[in-house]
Image (cartoon, helix red, strand yellow):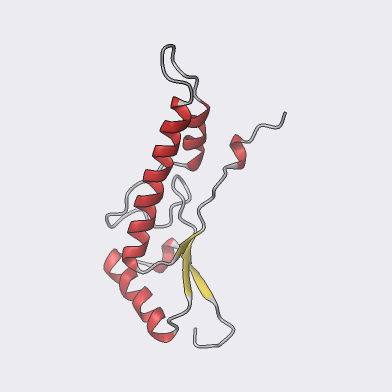
Length: 121
């Protein structure tokens, strides 16, 4: 970590035991290299590296895409499914970010688009 060409690292589920240990690990890394990026691929669903220790279970991002694509019930305002999906995505992002940041993680490789939901015309 002390090498000047090291820019950061990525954590996996095997790198931690509990939240206190994860927080201490991140603090130890920052003590050696304050400018290092501590990253994790933690996006919800089956790709959620931290599942225990009080971390919120997050849905797979494809569920947010499916929510966006839902048909609007009769009488509902146009775009209501998209608005609901945006609110759900925002809530997931806030929870994910707050929980990781509280432990000292700087960056999550969370997708902004789930390719399984892309439709090619």
